[in-house]
Image (cartoon, rainbow, N blue to C red; front, side, top):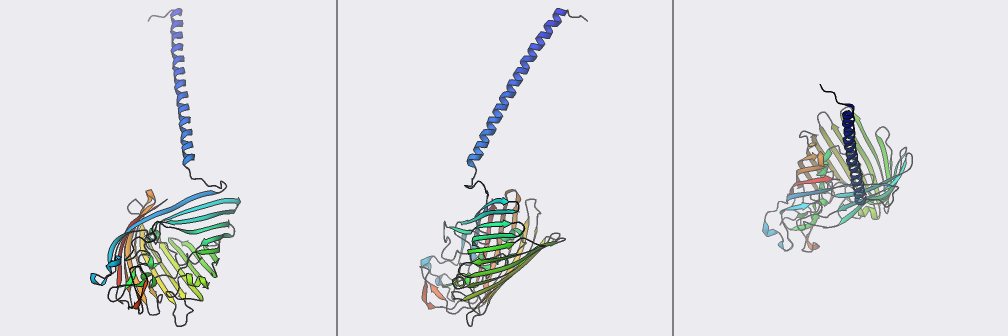
Length: 439
């Protein structure tokens, strides 16, 4: 082996140092360039996000925007196939297919602002917008697109909430009894059906024995005794051992109180509510009354509902009852019973599959002797990846008795003189399919 001379060794060392320095310098330069490019790109992305972000004018409150878009297609038939009896001058149809905004859980945009006053005490606001007409409970044989492009304002109030006591709300809102008849552990089945039996066909007109449209709608003979939104002051207590109470006062002269319970016993979940609403004067007229177009000096409503879900079997059941007590001499109280049972479980890996059956009966809403009922079945499929629900369902609605004194309607949809008794055997069938996407 040849041993290099000292001078050769010094030359080799100098060459290695030179090349090493060049490599370090080049690597450092590339690292510096990469860091500069990375930071510049990050700053640009942050600036873009800030520019596109939705901002609240009040930076001291945290604002949350949520809601859903619910769109469906409905095939319907009112059973009258004789074309000669219908008035084609105003597009009377006995069956059709419409694109609708689902009424059981309609398209909505909710804006919520919250801020901390101090530990355990918050304040904020709620603003609810309900865009798009063509509500399922407003379409009819003569109008497939009612209130198009309208935006309804709901649940608009300010609030103060104390964790140790409860929540106080002031503004336009439901009576506290609204949730008392809507306790339901049925999951996404509530996207297509709810406690209101008029959600699917409330705006459709009933026909007389000759097949002519009258001014009486299905919503006048088949509905729960719910309330309308008016300006109110409402309080809801914090929950103690699964129990909380609520009360509201407002409008012209309306008062309400409700009691709620929710708990879990092993594999069984339980939810229940009971409420009482009393309205006088103008509010008694504005509210859904125990009878169509009747003036009540005082209108009292009692509602209750309950629901069970057993997680092992994946079975659930819900039931609701409402009663509107009439103060009109000779008028009976109006009652509504609603029930739903089903099964829900994730069997596809996409999200819960929900299969349900439902039934409802209303008595005495339009008149003492008038009753109507419905039954229905359906299925919903949650898509967890996009927080959306696919649904399809069927409902059959049946009038149980005739109605004397109903008026015909003309092309302008106004009442004509000339009473015509309603066909006591008429029915209504509908198949509704669609999708709701939450955000």
